Length: 281
Length: 161
Image (cartoon, rainbow over all chains, first blue to last red):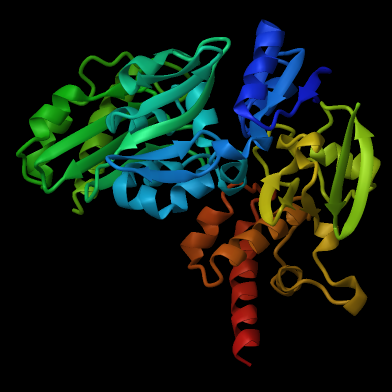
């Protein structure tokens, strides 16, 4: 199938994009890499009158060092995020998760900001962004504002980005030297995760941060498990009690891929694996 | 209609297209490049894989307008036809019989070329992971993986010869 007809705008600056969004309002849809949007348009689950393509705005691409954080431009592809030296050094968890998004072809087109703004609870980047305490820089008609990860994800496919706003970049506080692993559970290749766990640890183990994918309508932090892991030894026995807390407070969906209680079981098992791998064991 | 100008398989082309036209439709229906096929229509199978500015993409999941100003290479532009030779990866697929029905082959080859460009000496596991976005409905993966490994070997032999 092909999408219904739409008008196509290709602004070359964030200001132009915001003006287009202001003019067309609800009739318009922002397109980043298009890897989630185009299937939706092709299946005619959505039919915007105007598509605003951010692909021509070069200022939205790239990764830079900004003191205590690294800053990832919203239009940077998963492929570039995965391979970036700054990301690997200061936010290894993000590199590991970006490597697991869909498949090679999709990672060449799909973007970091686009995936986060799409806010699919089964998307791979929300959990690491939440675990690392990312900050989302959002541009609107009145200027830019910054939203903390804990406030960014609102509900299924819903974020704090307003109708007249665009996500421009994501700041990731540096976690230099932290081990990291993204443990994704799928039945077939390049599937969305049934459950995935994003874990990053300092030492083995002084401190841990854990994000959960597809365990509710938004990415979630496994806070109880994080607390229990502080000071734990990085052995199977050492992490088991903490990993058993990973599903606390979650409300995962039941669907053809698994029932809610099965997903909670997975979250506990995968947290144990992710933490051990993050700690290098 | 939106005007686009791009390079496809080495030739400059210019057209007015509907913004909703997919790159794969443009290649097949406007340019007649039917070597690139539509498999699943859901961006899963990778049969429509082409290179956009040198990296692999699923051309059913890119709009033709998004290719404006860019360079597209399809399976039809891979070989050096002036020399009458197949691309080494095409040659390897023939040598190792990396196909059954052949429908997934154009996409498999384009993805394999991308994979070997990034990682010229992959392990078998790296090949299987790197090709995960391409499905073979005959489930003939074994010979496909062999073909990619064979191409890597041939290329490195050629480089050192």
